Picture 1 (cartoon, rainbow, N blue to C red):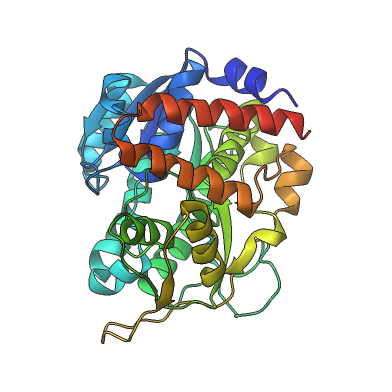
Picture 2 (cartoon, one colour):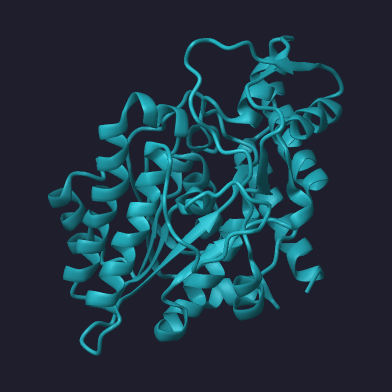
Length: 364
């Protein structure tokens, strides 16, 4: 498949609204869409970390950068009225499991009612909107089994974050069935569930890659809470390509693609946290890790979590491009170049997008 041609034909010159564009994944997809030629409008709070991908790539120079709360329904409605987005990628969220234990009310409010606000704006829009709402692989009722979860498996959530994402999926399904999958509606909505995303520009707390990089840059031992936990690791551009391809299909054929989708990695990327740390250390060239001592703040974390991606592979023509070693290599290269202070990280990130697209097209 000629991914460049497909994406260009769909997005060039179109207005695309991205919520959460100052976050990690939101920043990458905003940069990618701008490079394609889309008119990108971002709606988000300030970047959640310092530094951030948004700041390091000087994204504010490239796109329409609107600061706002996803819970501010009236402001969201005004954005839709002013810019008339043809596409929406909804990524704004409280994205951290451990923080959901400290701020459950915020987590449920942002992840559920924030999604409701976006869906309401789409429902009331006078123009057709094609929307992709990003939830999480943790939306499934995790039974701690070795089997990969499919899109029609039961939703659930032990912790507040996972429960909020499962609830968001139910909300999206309700809006889709009640308002969008009808003869009266010209808009369409899909939801997407990805695995544990790694890549350059993530500085969030309690994520393995940022934790590793902070420790390595400070010549400290990497501390790991749950070294044997197995997660579906994937390079950031892999699921984002899936989101973009889904939007292309959804625009042309809403009835065939307005549903939930998994975008996980190759099964070989489902490996323990300790292996990730070891690979990062090897790529960095020095360092070590150890098991973190209990700090009194231990919370429940799943041990097994895998995604079945057969539907996306079969119906979208999408598949993961990078195995775990390449994903780690690309990620560590990003942080290494950033740490020198001499690299233009916007251009470096764009080059990673270009190389990834080349690699994706060569594997078809």
